[in-house]
Length: 158
Image 1: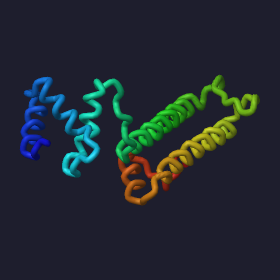
Image 2: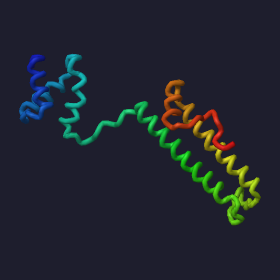
Image 3: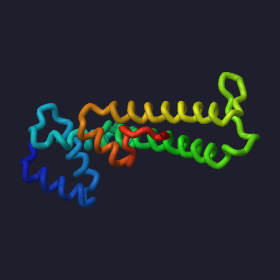
Image 4: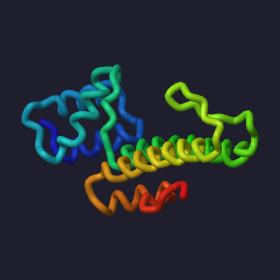
């Protein structure tokens, strides 16, 4: 049985990349024990991974940061699509060749086109609100709003 001091020395050498194969096998055997002291349990999974030849990576853990990034990406995509639609309608509204098709019917009347664009903007805005409201606590929701820089209490298009 190895002493804690011996294990600490071997671990220090291991993390410095100074262990030989026999010392590494000693560490693998030690961390494979069923009755491992609590102090050493955090290392068990890592040494099991190394001993298996690092063939499979551990599954990534779901974290708040990762969830925020995913939500921010979705919201950013929606905002880009909305911005492109707003730009298109703003700069091409006076052009008679521009039209909107709704349920297979071509709309050329500017008021009808505006109404459709506003409806789409409202749907995008609602999706943004749904993303923000999917987070369980208010602090997280406020952080998502701050990161995305959009106030979901204000309508996107007036």
